[in-house]
Each structure stands twice: as structure tokens, then as C-alpha cells.
Image (spheres, one colour):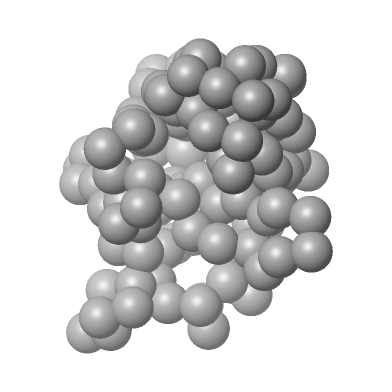
Length: 132
């Protein structure tokens, strides 16, 4: 398990931007990292993943507005969110995984498919609220 702490959530109007951060006291350099979100009454869904070599994978509905990045020297993961919509309102979680490299078309990159979620280390989440 990797300790993770998200920050940067808040309230923003539609069309605005936010940058989320996820930091750790441990070296994240060798880990696959990802962002997930869970809206009220809905299942947790994948947003984006970034491997230790910088390879990224986005959920189709977010690839034009959200950008994942990492700074291994700071042990920090980021999610830049632009053109936010009310439907982006959710709790956002970061996660770490050793990396999934199977042949599964449903994988969120190195975070793997839904069945791999149980192997992730999770942060406590940060709330993003987008008003219209």
C-alpha cells in the first residue's frame, strides 16, 4: 500500500478549471498512477492513467478536457481539468498500482480493467463541485 493524499478540489462555475494534486511520502516514480471519480449515486469510473514512463491513457469522454501528469521528483500526480461541466461534479480519487500490462481492451492503461481496482492503493478523495 502506498499512502496518497489528494488536494485541489473545490467549487467552480461551469467552464472553469481546476488542478488536482496527489502527493505521497513515498517514491512514486516506479508506480502506475491514475485518477478516478465517483459522482453521487454512481459507480466509480476511471478518468486517466499515467505509467512510470509517462505513457497516458484517458477515458474517452475526458481526453479533450482533462490532462494527467506527474512530477516524480516531487512524488506528485496532477490532473488538470478544463472546461468543467456540472456533470464533472464528483469525488476525485488518485490511485497507485504496480501496473497491469495484460491484453484487455477495457483497461485504463496501466491501471488495468475494473477487476484490477482491488489491487490499487487509494487516497481519501477530494471533492469537485461544478455549478451551472
